[in-house]
Image (cartoon, rainbow, N blue to C red; front, side):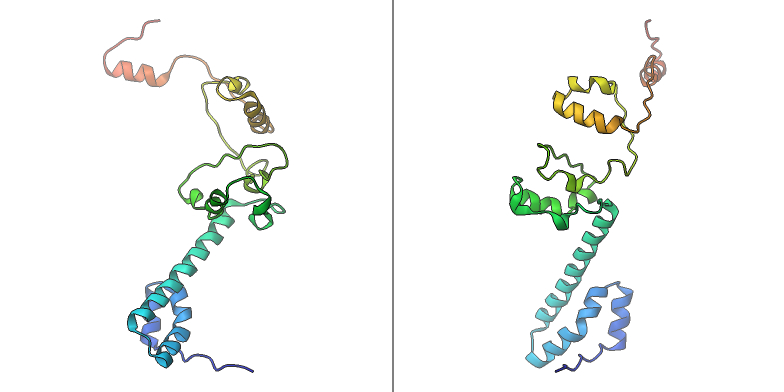
Length: 186
């Protein structure tokens, strides 16, 4: 049994929604308006439903875009994540899976023993380049973090890396002192 499709929305309304870039509202409008007419809905309810459709559609599109730009490795994805097997608190899992932290340019560090589900957000290792600058040589990272974390981080960082070391006095300090008429003592 097939149901008749909802009548098309008026051309002027369609043009306005296109102009305002409201694709999800435009898609939902024929059904919502037909139902609203049949059930004599309050105009505010019609607006609420149409705006909610646009918000839902945009949120879904944003998640798709964030997942795509994150370039998660194939095989281990959030789709294969078993939340019930994780020791990460459920509210934290839910917050992380929205991927909103990526849009805010925040970092994510996941630490734990092998096999506890860290590899799902590990999209950069051997897939992207990263540049790190530090006044500490990578061999000394264990002076600023626990040895186990320093070892694992340095291992992945230095694998396929170019190590460049610099020496000398600070260019910024010399420039700052020169601008004030101060000569550095050597």
